[in-house]
Image (cartoon, rainbow, N blue to C red; front, side):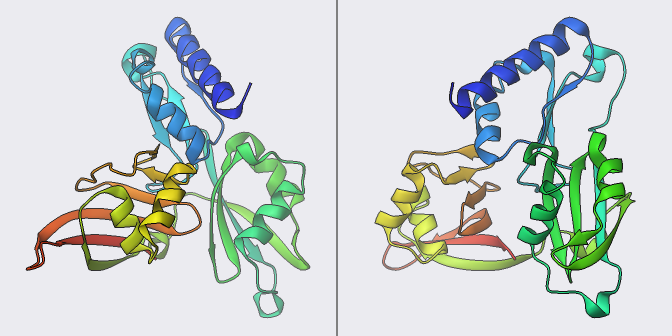
Length: 251
């Protein structure tokens, strides 16, 4: 059974249990490919009530909740904690990256599926984790690379960690997916089409394999290894019949 089949089977199982037992069930953190499987099944399992969250808006790794207050008769929040990891002595800290924090936490024997997004700022990290492993990480993570660290829960993210964007106006031949990717990421149309066919392109969480998909206002375009942006619509047509489009690029 491949990964997508296993994900689909698990989604169906949790939806059926939530509906039959009238209680909430949650997946582990799903990556973008796994989330795309869920979105393809969303209508099929909608009878159970579904909701998606990674702990904040715009997360790439998210849990799916099955169940609803109407179905279950109560409300239940996502079992996600935010942990704040900081050097004990910032003055002597090494330069720490996303890879360093992720590797140190996984080095404790924790599966990647229990970990959501990791936001790194100035050698410190905010990491979204399944609440079942929070205490274990707090008690056992004391070093990232060669830097001694401390870990604590935090109830909310500071404002400076909210997504930041650069607004751009670009010219494309059309709002087709391959054309927008090529122009936005400075690629040839052929290379853009290759990324799409390789399953590396997601529009609002859904894996897209059609190069000719037309984008619409508000679509979130993610290209693995390249970046992420929001398509904000068409702004006009040039004299050469090219389209001016507006995008907001995550920075």
